[in-house]
Amino acid sequence: MMEKTLIAVIGPTAIGKTNMAIKLAQYFKTEIISADSRQFYQEMEIGTAVPSPEGLGMVPHHFIQHKSIFESYSVGDFEKEAIAKLNRLFKSNDVVVIVGGSGLYMDAVVNGLDDFPDISEEIRTNLILEQQHKGLPYLQEKLKVLDPVYHKTVDLSNAHRVIRALEICIGTNKPYSSFLSKKKKSRSFKTIYVGLHAERTLIYKRINLRVDKMLEAGLLKEVKKLEEHKHLNALQTVGYKELFLYLEGRCSLNEAVEEIKKNTRRFAKRQLTWYRKNQNILWVDQNADLTTVIAKLHITGRP
Image (cartoon, rainbow, N blue to C red; front, top):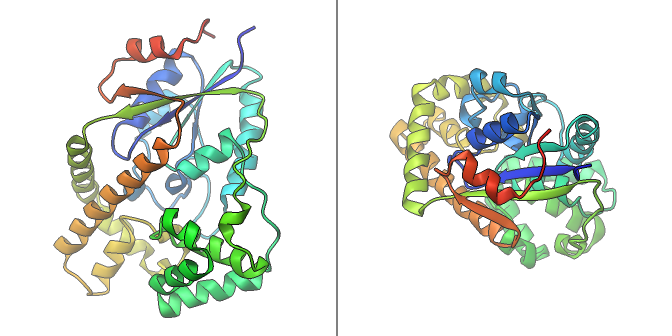
C-alpha cells in the first residue's frame, strides 16, 4: 500500500500555486486543502485571489470562503479542522494536495502548533482597543520591548499576529518567542513540498499585474461594501487596508494602488524568507510542466 502523502504546493504570491495545485490534484484524482488564511472569508473574494469558479469546479476544494469575517477563526482552529478533513480524505485517497502562501497555516498542518497557555480574553480585548485608538505602530513598539526576538521575525503589518504575541507576553510575563519550541507533532502522513520559483523581477511583475486585474474586477467596490467593518481582524490585510485609507480621504486612489503593490511585494519577500528555513522543498520553475513536477515527486503508484 502506498504511504499517505500530502503534497504541499508553496511559493510567493501570484506565482501560480493555484494552477499547479489543480493540475496535481487532477493527476492524482484527489482533493485540495487551501491553507491561504485570506481566502477563508466569504466576504473577501477579489482582493484575496480566490480561485475562479472554473478552477473550483475542476477539483474539490476545502477551506475556501467557509467562514465569515464576523467569526473568530484562529490558526489553531484551522489546524484541528484541516487535520480532521485530511484524516477523512486519506481514507479514500493516497495523495492529498495542500496549497497556500500562509506559511504559519501550512506549518500548522504539517508540523503542528506550539502549545500556548490560555490567556484572559480581557487582554486581547484591551489590545484591540489600543490598536483602534493608538494604531498598529504603537503595538509594534510594545512588542519590540516585550519580545525583541519575535519582533525581528514577525510580519509587523499583520495586526492579528502582533496582538497574539502581545497577549501571550502580557498574560504570562514571558516573551512569546520562548514558547516557540519548534517540536514537530507526529502525523499519519508524509509531506512533500513543491515550491514554485521565478526571478524576483518576474514575481514583482506578476504581482503588479494581479493588482491591476483585481482593480478591473471590482476590488474597490468590494472594499466599499466592507468599509463599515474595517476594524475587524480579517480586514487588516493587504489590498483592503490601503483602499480603506483612500476611502477615508487620506490618499489618492493611485497612491493606494501603489501601496497595495508595494506591500504585496514586501509580503512576497517575507514568504521567500520563510521558505528558506525549509531545506526539504523541491523547487521547480513556475513554468514547469506537470511531467517534470511528477518526476521530482518520486511517488510510486497512482490512485
